[in-house]
Amino acid sequence: MCADCGCGDEAGARLTVLSEHAGHEHEHHSHSRVVSVEQAVLAKNDHLAADNRAWLASRRITAVNLMSSPGSGKTTLLERTIRDLDGARSVSVIEGDQETLLDAERIRATGRPVVQINTGGGCHLDAEMLARGLRALDPQPTSLLFIENVGNLVCPALFDLGEGARAVIISVTEGDDKPLKYPHMFAAADVVLVNKIDLLPYVDFDLEKCAERARSVRRGVEILALSAKTGEGFAAWHEWLRR
Image (cartoon, rainbow, N blue to C red):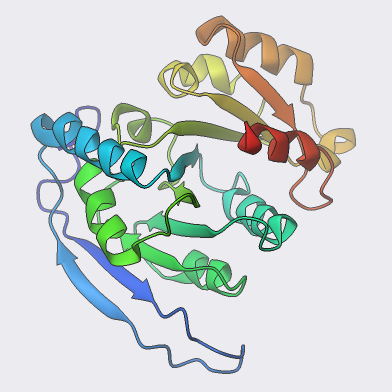
């Protein structure tokens, strides 16, 4: 159960493996395997996250948890990141959403392995869901794994998944006061990505003020301004991933 909102007791999560051999874009009938999953009890989450962390470390897999509110551009950012890497490193993705396979289908179009976890009524991924996803996905050793969490700036910050790093994404259309409104999320961030900077001329958003507010809750956190649409600022993001 989520300590903040109480979701999860009766919310049945579903895991879908999207075939890596889908072929051309016109082939709509992918072979999928659906597994019924129950949400982990919050009391067990940290223990399960430690197991996930050990599993990933033993295979030298770098796992990055992408967290944001809905509509910040997580999936678009992920698509461009994968295409920019262009096979330079093996990449796989675990997608988290309450319903639909829409985002997972977009990732599959990049040619990378992807598993969709639908949480039902749940507002976040937890360590047990990730463990099931890892077993289904079986990412390659030394690879890069992106975990796209459910769009929510509250609950995902409370659940350790066993990931190696947490990236919080905020778009300039959301307002520069988000770090103060959602301090737990920004306090958990290893990097803050300010997306959609191509829209800065049209919105009331102060980059410096946003960075100052984010660092008031997470001292020294790295702030990267970029545009998933145009690619501006992505060199710094790729450098951060390399580090």
